[in-house]
Amino acid sequence: MPPHPSSRIQKARQALANRLREIRKDAGISGRELAVRCGWSESKSSRIENAKTPPSDADIRAWCRACAAEDQAPDLIAANRQSAEAHVEWKRLQRTGLRRLQESTGDLYQQTKTFRVYVSDVIPGFLQTPGYASALLTSIADFRGTPDDVSDAVAARMRRNEVLKKGGRRFSFVLEESVLRYRLCSSETMAAQLGHLLGVMDLHNVAVGIVPFSERRAVWPMPTFTVFDDRRVHADTLDAASTLAQPSQVELYTRAFERLSQGAARGAAARSLIADAVASLG
Image (tube, rainbow, N blue to C red; front, side, top):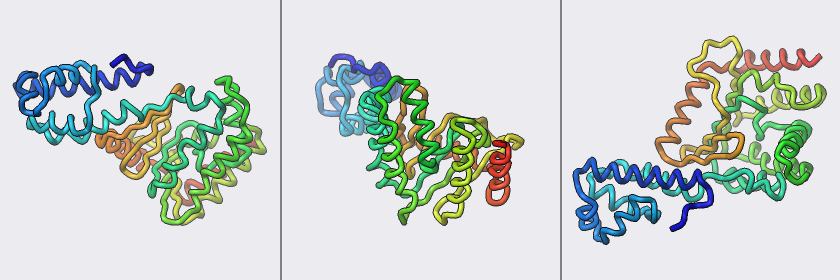
C-alpha cells in the first residue's frame, strides 16, 4: 500500500505498527508463531508490522489475544480508526470556504449529550454572537486566503449552535480570562458578545467557569479542546483539527478539563470578571 498522502496519518499508522511489534516482542514470540496463533500467513504479520497493510479491528483483537495483551486492544483499535479518518485537514475542509467547515460537525453535535469545552483563545463557537463570529471568521478567511463565504459560514454556525437550546444536552465551558480581553472585533461588537455570554449563563443546561489571571493554577493554560461525551475529543492547532478517539486520550483530556475547572470562578465571581472586561472596553 502506498504511503498515505497525509504524512501525519502515515506517521500514525507507523506508530500503530510499532506498538503491535512491541506487543509481539514483549510476548516473546516470533512473527511466524504469531501468524500460527492468529490463523493467518506470516507475510500478513510482516505487512502489518511494517505498516504496509492497515489491520482491521478483528486483526488487532486477534493479535492482542495471541500475545496475551487483550487489555491493549481498545486503545489500538481506536488508534487504527483515528489514523484512517480522524485527523481532518483544515485546508481540505476550507478549500471551498468556511461554510463547509461549520457544517462538517453538525451530525456530531446532534448525537452528543454532554459537551465539555475549554478555550484559551476565543469565545467558544457555541456562545458566539453573529457579529463576533463574523469578525473572527473574516480574520480566519483572510489569513488562510480561503473563498469569502463568511456570511454563509456565520449563518451555518448559528444554525449549528441551536443545539445549545435543545433539551437533553448539557454544556460545561471553562474559559481563560484572557478570552474576555482579546480584541478580535470592535468594542461595540465585543460588548454585545460579553452581554450575550452573561445571558447564556442563565440557561439551566449551561455551566460557565472562568479561570482568573490571578488564580493559582492546578495546570497550565492549554490549547482549545472539546470533549464530546466520553467518546471523542477535538483538539485545535493552527493547521488542523485533530480528532482523538483512543480511550486513553479521551480520559487524558477529560482529566485535564476537570483540573482546569478546579480553578474556575463561577456564578457571581464569573459575572464580575465579565463585567470588568466590559468596563475595560471604554
